[in-house]
Image (cartoon, rainbow, N blue to C red; front, side, top):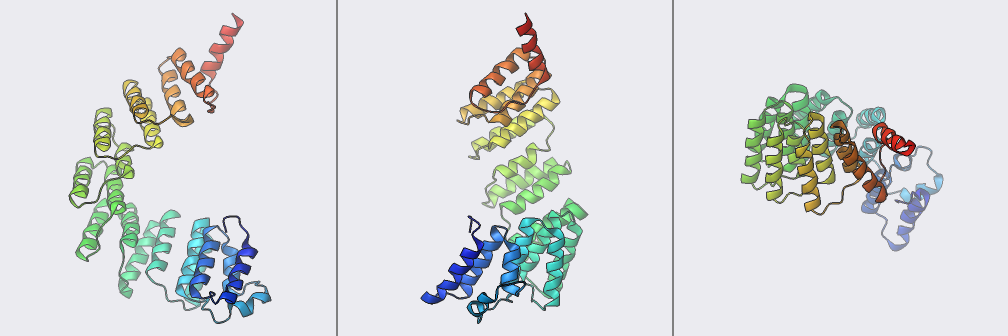
Length: 324
């Protein structure tokens, strides 16, 4: 399906009948694959007879094309394509057709509401689920915690987090990261550190996203570097975008020493800087007026086949030297 051979995939599914393998499971696999690779229009046409070739009618007879599972897959497909209007229309169509929405239906649509900038609607859906007696899992709770935190504040998010634990749903690393991000964005770092310590006590190991929540919001280089060391000591390896983010942040503040500390750590961990890392370093050096050193790194990245940003400072200097 990754080769986008849609008709061939559908024909292959139909031929499964020859081996007595054409059933609800193989149908689900087909629809899921179509939606995963953004052939949602074709999946919808196949399931609901919209412009469907008549040749497939006999092959699809006897299969439940109206199951909630099939609808959820197609809804997730529209979500993957970010066709927000189509998501809403399909959600409403599910009601018109009498489709019984389950936990996964709501989880997908709550995520859709958050992604398209309407977290309050996700909270409304959560309340609707509670009225219907639908029990939430950790994935659904994570979406609602994020939504209620954005729309009603971090305290409401923490309250919902406590509620999920009382109801027997154990948080995972995404739950903690969601709350950490909300706390850090609100400047409540002391509480965020308590949550970080709580994660370890509950056997939920922090990941790189956990630390990114702090790095993006902390405003003191010393605090950031201390937490950076703690992260490495705990066994969490920084990604390239971690180094780039920190170098750019320190550079914006005008601190050169922390930039080189981070650069050195990157080399010590065996990571070869990419074009974003080089460009971040060169920008800081030029900001500090260290043109010769900036040119050195600029030439180094070019020798590695990386793309350097066009910079007037370096070009002007090179032109001047050439004229002499």
